[in-house]
Amino acid sequence: MASTFSYNSFGFLLILVAFSSLINISSAGRQIAPKTSIEFIRTSCSSTTYPKLCYESLLTQASMIQTSPQLIAHAALNVTLSTAKSTSAMMVKLAKSQGLKPTEVGAMQDCVEELEDTIDELRKSISEMGQIKGSNFALMINDIQTWVSAALTDENTCADGFGGKNMNGSIKTAVRSKIVTIAHLTSNALALVNSYASFHG
Image 1 (cartoon, rainbow, N blue to C red):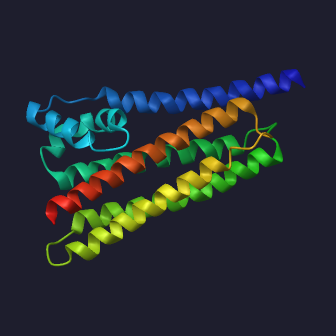
Image 2: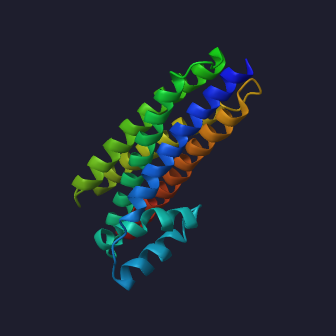
Image 3: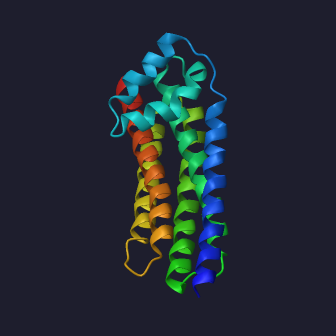
């Protein structure tokens, strides 16, 4: 029994290492951006709940963001979507691992469903943000705020599913950590969307 647990834990860790490598690779391609763009990101992120995460996640997008409230909100949504998709793929693989308890498999499957909803809501938000127009601004920004808020609720529901005591400790900690990161990114994106709405208003 101990050897099986060790094998499963090793496989689980390999998946996490691969997932972390993807993030490191994506952040390695950092481009040199104008100082004004970097300061704009720092200032904009200071109004979010998780400013350090906000700044670090958007710094690679500085050249594209420039000093635009719309573009920084759009970039934040894209970063959140990318992270949600990667985490969902990781959890699909984990759910198929041998040796997991039925409660663990069930929690992962439920979480994957919640993340699918999150991904759908973020995609709709990104699409709407790219088409937003002056005449319909209030209606469209309200849709975006509603979808991003719903995504945040889905992520919190997913995280709650791993709060029980009947979970493998390493799986519980690792999965909740990934979901919490997505929730924090979503919270930051929502704050930047709200700032854009206020700026436009």
